[in-house]
Length: 166
Image 1 (cartoon, rainbow, N blue to C red):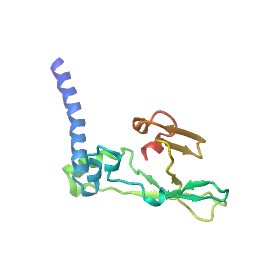
Image 2: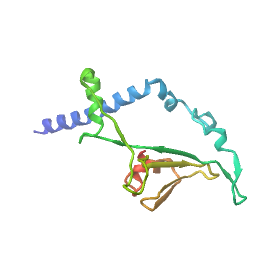
Image 3: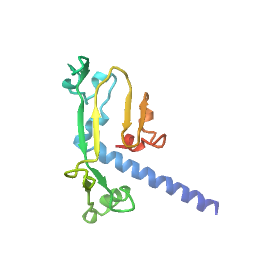
Image 4: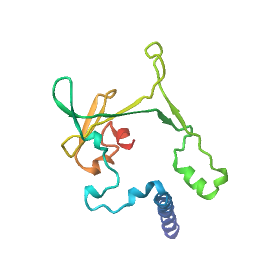
């Protein structure tokens, strides 16, 4: 019995390690993802940069100087299955001709309040002079200030886990 338990545990961990290795290999070898694996010893070496127009200050109506704000509106992605995404990766690797994914994105509107459906996710980016990331949710009336990169990946810490994951 002990050998069976040991083998089951080993295969369990091997399955997850195999998935991690396949995802890492797939992501690493896609040309559009090369920037994620570049060696970075200094922030200036990072291949992703904030566009210079977002660093320029402009005068607001109240006379104060503030940097520009980038706004991105996006629909919500719906998963039409109950099993999430991870199963399609194995299916695509082992049986690519049978792997199919249906992506659906959704805009929302409230009847008699909105003239037309619109993307429900509204994201704003403004560069500030502090090394922090501030996440705010208007509908949840919640805000968090992240000071460490590890906090970005702590999805269960508070109600803003979906903002971190997005």
